[in-house]
Image 1 (cartoon, rainbow, N blue to C red):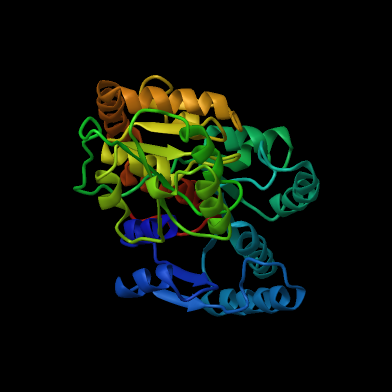
Image 2 (image 1 turned 120 degrees about the vertical axis):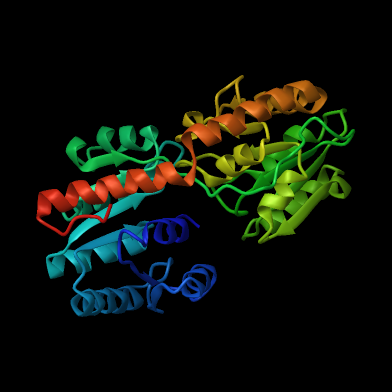
Length: 354
């Protein structure tokens, strides 16, 4: 969604061609809008030396054929291979780090592997875009990037006409939009809410390898009849408009779109205080933040929100205002275009169109 919104939002100012590994949601959205897409089947998330080498060669050939002024990469694997191929072709690069693989909350063993790799890749990177001040601080703390390389551009999401009524209903719905996989903590939410006496219903929107664990936990807690596992949906905005509280419980985050989508709908938010979440959710202003892994604090926050419709309305209105003021798609596009323009001036590249 981030790449789609970026490409469609700036394509009047920047000519984009997009290389991806899967021919699914993103490629369908971009092709429908007339954007040129290159599907490189060997460009995959999982580690595979043979496929990774093939993907690197394919990216090298593609960059050689297109001769772009700039390569902008996203995600860990594509980010590494894309920057290697661009460096080999002498093309300037920007990498958006949506969340570092060595952020707080990541296991130490993984950090020990990720930090030297990212530090080495930084030598090939002209600019980093990070999506939160928290991610900027982590990059500088572990010295994987120099201060002059890093620019913060908060995520933004497209507006919709869907609005929630968080103060309505005697059976409030708590909605969590997230992939069912680490570092998300669906089962922690279930354990925290299971003993709350106020009426409630939980909706999980998304799917993933932890789905069976979530189903099993709901059954063991005796609350399966109050938990809806809706899977991957294309009508997230409408589902949030039917809800009363937005939740995102996780061990680690960058600057999650799910929180912004809830605020856009006018929902109060309960979220783990990790990564850049506190830069979006104002504690006791637009929602409630709870410490990582703290089931007791989460239970208290859920109880307050479920038992107080007026609190939900107040936080929801404030969240909608914060979205309009700070997290619209326009601010994300303007921030990204500013990084392009800055690098273009420094490298002597064509200017970004006004």
